[in-house]
Image (cartoon, rainbow, N blue to C red):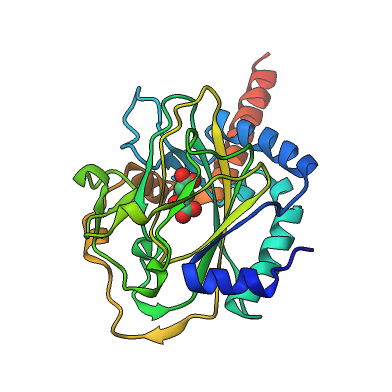
Length: 288
Ligand SMILES: O=C(O)CCC(=O)C(=O)O
């Protein structure tokens, strides 16, 4: 099991991010790569609104430039029992405290050559839950080497000690999920974190970060586990104004999936289909 030494913990506290050379084994990374390629090829989670183009508007006939799947473990149960998950939770408990729990996870693919840049943002700007506050960190693991050319993570050191800055939807398009920080900050202070496959970059939810476009001939895949500490009431926390007008096609797909009964509805529809087919067969037998 991984744990951080004192120097790593104080680096994280001071800078708001921490690169690590390894968080899991090469064998596990190879296995995860196969799983990710299968999930992205089949667009797992599309109907449920869990898969979408983070930097695009999911327009029909348009190749996604930054495909993302939220909670991929729901579509690939093998992801539930990884060394990455065990090690990441241990690290999260070191950084946030013993009460830290898994919060959500995501898989991001930056496709070869067309993979879009992930804009500068703070993860906390994406929070939809007013009235509460909690510590949150993300542990980002690349499934192949991450470089400046394919889109490694970049951070503004110390930005986690400031407030949540102003954001807007990327390209001012409310159909796009990605947020971009539109406040003034010094991007020349950015530190890039190239990593080997199976390494990790840990960041605080207020740390300003981005990842450049993928200009290489290979996809850049990343698996991200987010953790949070116990929520505490924070009545003054309101919904961020940049989230109010969001109208993403993924949210519409999620709503219509739920309206149709979600997974239960799907099982019900499948069962109804079987029953209809059986009834047709029986009535055909009686007609003979
Ligand atoms: O993988 C990327 O391109 C961006 C990931 C990111 O922004 C995050 O994990 O918070």
